[in-house]
Amino acid sequence: MKIVKHISIILLVFATSFVSAQVEFNAKASKTTLGVNERLRIDFEMNQDGDNFNPPDFANFTVVGGPNQAVSNSWINGKRTFKKTYSYFLAPKSRGNFTIEQATIVIDGQTYKTTPIKIEVTAAVDIPKDPNDPQYLASENIHLVAEVSKTNPYLNEAITVVYKLYVSPKIAVDNWNEIDTPRYNDFWSQNIDTQGQKVQNGKFNGEDYRFLVLRKTVLYPQKTGKLDIEPLTLDIALRVPTNRRDIFGSLLMTRTSKTVSAGNKTINVKPLPEVGKPVDFAGAVGDFNLNVSASKTELDATESLQVKVDVSGNGNLKLFKLPKISLPSSLEVYEPEHKENVRTNLSGMQGDISDSYTVVPQYKGKYPIPSISFSYFDLATESYKRLSSDEIVINVLSGPSNTNANNSGTSVASGNKQEVVLNSDHFAFIKTKTEFEAIKQEYFFKTKLFWSLLLLPFLVIPVAIVIRNKKASRDADVFGNKIRKADKLAKKYLSSAKKSLGKKEAFYIALEKALHNYLKAKLHIETSDLSKDKIKSLLEQKQVQPEVIKDFIGIIESCDFARYTPIDSVTMQEDYDKAAKTISLIDKQAR
Image (cartoon, rainbow, N blue to C red; front, top):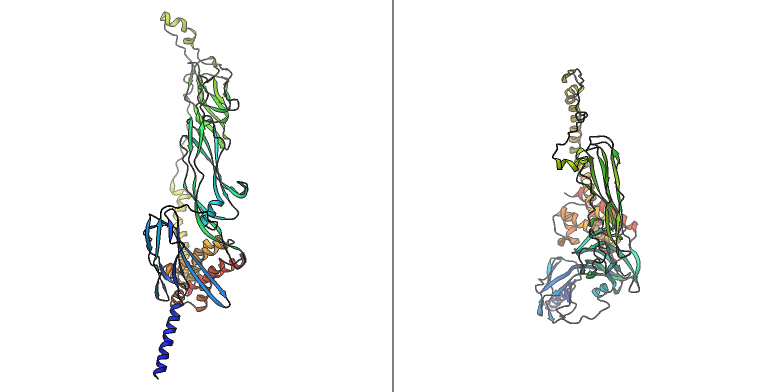
């Protein structure tokens, strides 16, 4: 009996050791010695799914990436192999010897801890170009370029800056965001809309690339000398190939992020030449036309006309003032109305600007509008040009005579009083005839509006009763309300996944997130608590039918497997319909 007892104890110890050996939870560092300018990757791996993963406090490091979660599920010769990894990318804050403390996780109700890892951080080192390093692959295969149309423009000459993102076909870009936008100090700037730009094929350093135009900007330098064009900086999330392949022979991709900058650009702005510069030059640079016109050349006194000064063409239309017109004192002139009809494209500003003067003659006679001139710097010939308008004569046909103008040579010297000119039409605007009409008295109580307002409450009451009865009947339909609420809930949580149908990875990420969010809202548990066993237990407590629970867990497993296997659009639609149906059933059955 004693021998049997000892054998039983030994077998029990071996069985316990075997069971405990089934669970593995380890921490692995990409390196234990690194320079202060290098990065460190820490992987926390487990061979069984767990809950409440708690990473260590990376006190002496800056977390520059992560946590990234990866799940591997495979079947080899009928044996299932599972691995789940949490990855962090760390940058050391200083030199020294540091320790990555323990991480913890709960697996099957038991807490497991990793072994601490000692890390030595040395002085900065020359980072070798590792062809398998994701950061190196990203830096070699993605480039942000600022193309400047001209580096030595004249003052107020238009130049363009086009920002292009070149991406090698070897990598895939998920998204990007601007982290530093150029401010264009010392420039007048105008961004050109680039919405709807398509990816194009091109060359970069002699190699085939795809590129996308991110931003187009037109600049007019406002100072001479060397001016800096600030860089555009992007933070890009992308996927680069690894040296590993999946079961179908395709290269596996790994996610990383890269900060790229277009670099600082310097241009040398030339001043406009002083030789031949007109005295009235107002800073216009480009190619222009001048037009001065009057809305009418014959009119009566006290009538008005419009005199328009218009400059059209290509150049810095918004950055100079139009020449003023000079009119005789007998013409009353009001402040001009300024209008701009200017569009901006890659060649600069185009269109016209104008000043419209309202002119009112006071006396009869002929009044000339003298010629005006406008000068500008022509970029094509690199010289100044002058434009002049024709003289316009305004003929005022009727009105009082301007005796002050006719006798001005003698009236001041002799001191004689001016003759007052009377006009019999001075009071023509006053009406001297009236027309009377009898006022017909009306009473409100005889109108249609009165009777409508009186009868309206009697018509509304039956309608309100019908609506209230329908609402009461609908409220009493508990089962029907529950079905409608469940269907609405399913559509709410799965709306993001529906938008991604056809895009495998984005769809299954959104679908898995929707399922988790639904459980969090329904079962009041955190995402870290969502193990399959716990989901099953909680749904059983809610009296959800076993086949519905099985379908729900099956969908979650499909989300894991689908990321690593080819899936067509039909399968995605089936998974979406199944998820919507399952969420609706759970909401109907849960107590």
